[in-house]
Amino acid sequence: MLRSAPQGGPHAGLDGALPSVLQARGRTTGDHLDMHLPRRALFALGAAPALARAQSAWPERPVRVIVPIPPGSTPDTAGRAVATHFTTAFGQPFVVENRPGAGGTIGTDAVAKATDGHTLGVSINAPLSTAKALYPNLPYDPSRDLAPVSLLVRGAQMLVTHPGLPVSDLAGFIAHVKANPGKLSYGSVGSGSGAHLAMVDLMSRAGLDMVHVPYRGFPQATLDLVAGRIEAMFVISA
Image (cartoon, rainbow, N blue to C red; front, side, top):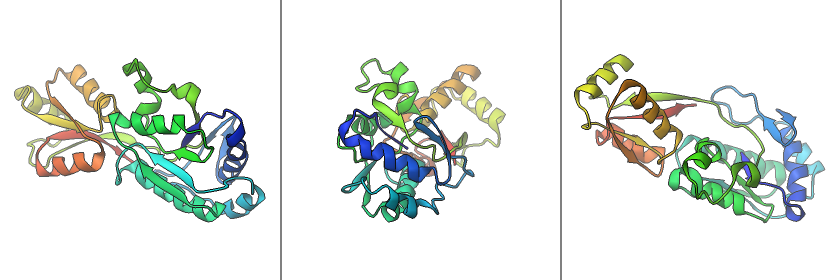
């Protein structure tokens, strides 16, 4: 979870109230909270309501929770779980708003540009890390314009294929792709996304030639994978 970097004024209440509630089940280091969670756990905020009452200055109105990819993805699920907890804890609606596109940078930019003190974001790795190196005209600076609040989910990249592909392990996949250069395709949530870069890395290491098909989100890519319109993709096993 992230928010726009504090500029004073409307962020003062958020800086005090939100980290205090999160400390119920985590530890903070400066402005960053690291939630040490099981793979599928999102939040355990048993003490949150009491802490929220103690920090009554924020929020003063409904809070947007921007997710930079479509519904059905891991960040979307995490964001909705957090929004549900925070709505109860703070007594104000936390409303999830999906803003997909451009590998997650459109929604992340919306968080960075927010100045109302009532906007949070649930992001994926790429818009916060590799995007700055890949896109010279990125409209925000992740280190300057955004402030981390909490790590919600940890997961590993996992290669999945269409069940009709005649492979049963990575070696078989590599051999099959090499035997069919340029004929197989893979999906991702956009150029520069983690799934895209993971496959680019594999292709570079193994000398593979595949066609990249970018999607606005993993749900659409998954449907096409199951239907056989693409043959493979990397997904997060969270």
